[in-house]
Amino acid sequence: MPTHASGAFDVKLTPQSSDPLPEGTTLGRMSIDKQFHGDLEGSSKGEMLSAMTSVKGSAGYVAIERVTGALGGRKGSFVLQHSGTMARGAQQLTITVVPDSGTGDLAGLTGAMTIRIEAGGKHFYEFDYEIAAIA
Picture 1 (spheres, helix red, strand yellow):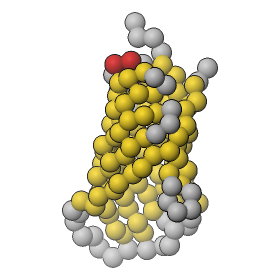
Picture 2 (tube, rainbow, N blue to C red):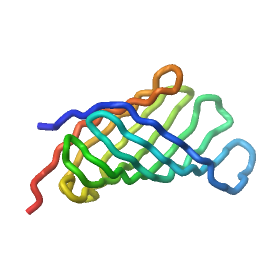
Picture 3 (cartoon, one colour):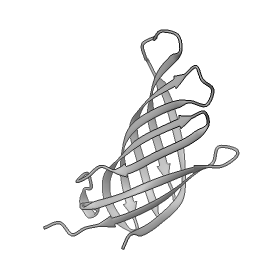
Protein backbone atom coordinates (compact mmCIF):
# COMPACT_ATOMS: atom_id res chain seq x y z
CA MET A 1 0.00 0.00 0.00
CA PRO A 2 1.48 3.38 -0.99
CA THR A 3 2.56 5.95 1.59
CA HIS A 4 1.45 9.55 1.09
CA ALA A 5 3.78 12.52 1.59
CA SER A 6 2.94 16.19 1.18
CA GLY A 7 4.37 19.61 1.75
CA ALA A 8 5.56 22.81 0.14
CA PHE A 9 8.61 23.55 -1.95
CA ASP A 10 10.54 26.56 -3.15
CA VAL A 11 11.84 26.54 -6.70
CA LYS A 12 14.36 28.65 -8.57
CA LEU A 13 14.50 28.31 -12.36
CA THR A 14 17.53 29.81 -14.08
CA PRO A 15 17.38 30.24 -17.87
CA GLN A 16 20.28 28.68 -19.78
CA SER A 17 21.40 29.48 -23.30
CA SER A 18 19.37 28.03 -26.16
CA ASP A 19 19.48 28.22 -29.94
CA PRO A 20 17.00 30.44 -31.83
CA LEU A 21 14.38 28.60 -33.93
CA PRO A 22 12.12 29.52 -36.82
CA GLU A 23 8.97 31.50 -36.05
CA GLY A 24 6.20 29.77 -34.12
CA THR A 25 8.13 27.71 -31.58
CA THR A 26 10.41 28.77 -28.77
CA LEU A 27 12.68 26.25 -27.07
CA GLY A 28 14.03 26.96 -23.63
CA ARG A 29 16.42 25.31 -21.19
CA MET A 30 16.57 25.99 -17.47
CA SER A 31 18.40 24.74 -14.43
CA ILE A 32 16.22 23.74 -11.47
CA ASP A 33 17.02 24.30 -7.78
CA LYS A 34 14.38 23.24 -5.24
CA GLN A 35 14.02 23.11 -1.47
CA PHE A 36 11.39 20.64 -0.22
CA HIS A 37 9.59 21.01 3.13
CA GLY A 38 7.14 18.74 4.94
CA ASP A 39 7.23 14.95 4.66
CA LEU A 40 10.06 15.33 2.14
CA GLU A 41 12.88 17.46 3.56
CA GLY A 42 15.69 18.10 1.14
CA SER A 43 16.83 19.73 -2.05
CA SER A 44 17.05 18.94 -5.72
CA LYS A 45 19.00 20.00 -8.75
CA GLY A 46 17.90 19.37 -12.30
CA GLU A 47 17.47 20.45 -15.90
CA MET A 48 14.32 21.37 -17.81
CA LEU A 49 13.65 21.68 -21.55
CA SER A 50 10.54 23.49 -22.74
CA ALA A 51 8.76 24.36 -25.96
CA MET A 52 6.20 27.15 -26.33
CA THR A 53 4.09 27.48 -29.46
CA SER A 54 2.50 30.49 -31.09
CA VAL A 55 -0.90 29.33 -29.76
CA LYS A 56 -1.60 30.88 -26.36
CA GLY A 57 -1.70 28.25 -23.62
CA SER A 58 0.01 25.48 -25.63
CA ALA A 59 3.43 24.27 -24.53
CA GLY A 60 5.39 21.27 -23.30
CA TYR A 61 8.27 20.47 -20.99
CA VAL A 62 10.44 17.60 -19.80
CA ALA A 63 12.74 17.64 -16.80
CA ILE A 64 14.99 15.45 -14.71
CA GLU A 65 15.88 16.32 -11.12
CA ARG A 66 17.91 14.52 -8.46
CA VAL A 67 16.39 14.86 -4.98
CA THR A 68 18.60 14.44 -1.90
CA GLY A 69 17.24 14.43 1.64
CA ALA A 70 14.85 12.55 3.90
CA LEU A 71 11.48 11.10 2.92
CA GLY A 72 9.38 9.92 5.85
CA GLY A 73 12.56 9.88 7.96
CA ARG A 74 14.53 7.75 5.46
CA LYS A 75 17.66 9.40 4.07
CA GLY A 76 18.98 9.06 0.55
CA SER A 77 18.42 10.33 -2.95
CA PHE A 78 16.29 9.56 -6.00
CA VAL A 79 15.56 10.96 -9.45
CA LEU A 80 12.24 12.40 -10.65
CA GLN A 81 11.28 12.49 -14.33
CA HIS A 82 8.74 15.14 -15.47
CA SER A 83 6.66 15.21 -18.65
CA GLY A 84 4.12 18.00 -19.04
CA THR A 85 1.93 19.41 -21.78
CA MET A 86 -0.54 22.24 -21.97
CA ALA A 87 -3.07 22.27 -24.83
CA ARG A 88 -4.77 25.68 -25.02
CA GLY A 89 -4.64 25.89 -21.22
CA ALA A 90 -5.58 22.27 -20.39
CA GLN A 91 -2.66 20.88 -18.40
CA GLN A 92 -1.35 17.33 -18.11
CA LEU A 93 1.67 16.55 -15.92
CA THR A 94 3.31 13.26 -15.01
CA ILE A 95 6.14 13.11 -12.47
CA THR A 96 7.51 9.67 -11.62
CA VAL A 97 10.48 8.21 -9.79
CA VAL A 98 13.05 6.87 -12.24
CA PRO A 99 13.24 3.10 -11.63
CA ASP A 100 16.18 1.97 -9.46
CA SER A 101 17.34 5.56 -8.85
CA GLY A 102 16.87 5.41 -5.06
CA THR A 103 19.99 5.35 -2.89
CA GLY A 104 20.65 4.84 0.82
CA ASP A 105 17.47 4.26 2.83
CA LEU A 106 15.48 5.14 -0.31
CA ALA A 107 16.77 2.21 -2.39
CA GLY A 108 13.75 0.48 -3.96
CA LEU A 109 11.68 3.69 -4.08
CA THR A 110 8.86 3.91 -6.64
CA GLY A 111 6.10 6.47 -6.90
CA ALA A 112 4.46 9.46 -8.51
CA MET A 113 4.24 13.12 -7.53
CA THR A 114 1.75 15.86 -8.31
CA ILE A 115 2.38 19.60 -8.06
CA ARG A 116 -0.08 22.35 -7.19
CA ILE A 117 0.70 26.04 -7.66
CA GLU A 118 -1.52 28.48 -5.80
CA ALA A 119 -2.13 32.16 -6.40
CA GLY A 120 0.98 34.12 -5.53
CA GLY A 121 3.23 31.33 -6.83
CA LYS A 122 3.31 29.10 -3.71
CA HIS A 123 4.21 25.52 -4.73
CA PHE A 124 2.99 22.30 -3.06
CA TYR A 125 3.63 18.60 -3.74
CA GLU A 126 1.68 15.39 -3.12
CA PHE A 127 3.79 12.23 -3.36
CA ASP A 128 2.48 8.64 -3.27
CA TYR A 129 5.34 6.19 -2.94
CA GLU A 130 6.47 2.73 -1.89
CA ILE A 131 9.86 1.40 -0.88
CA ALA A 132 10.35 -2.23 -1.83
CA ALA A 133 12.86 -4.42 -0.08
CA ILE A 134 15.96 -4.91 -2.23
CA ALA A 135 17.11 -8.51 -2.45
